[in-house]
View 1 (spheres, rainbow, N blue to C red):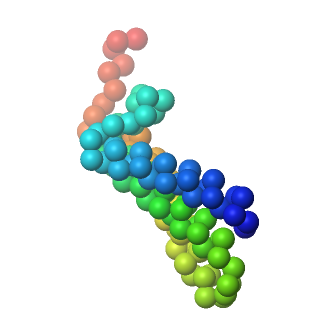
View 2: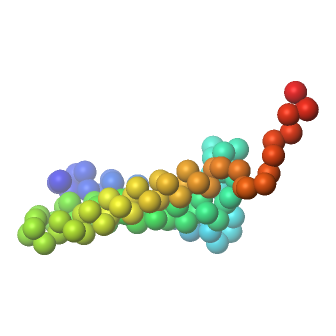
Length: 105
C-alpha cells in the first residue's frame, strides 16, 4: 500500500477514534447516529477499537520491510476492526428487559 492510500486511511481512522473518545468521555454522538445509538459509552468503545485497528492496519500495510514478521500484527489489527464493528452493533441494540410499547400505534 502506497502512502497515497495509507495517509488518508490513517487520518480517517484517527477521526473515527477521536469520535469514539468523545462518545466515551462526554457522551457525544454525531447527529447522523443519534437515533440509532442506545448505549453511548459502548458505542464510543466500539468506535475507538475500530479506529485503532484501522490505523494500525494502515501503518502495518505501509511498512513493507519484512512481510513474515508483520503477519500476526496484521491479523490482530483485522481482529480489532471486526471486534469494533461488533461492539458498535451491540451498542445499537435495546437493553435486556426493555419492551417496546406496541399500543401507541
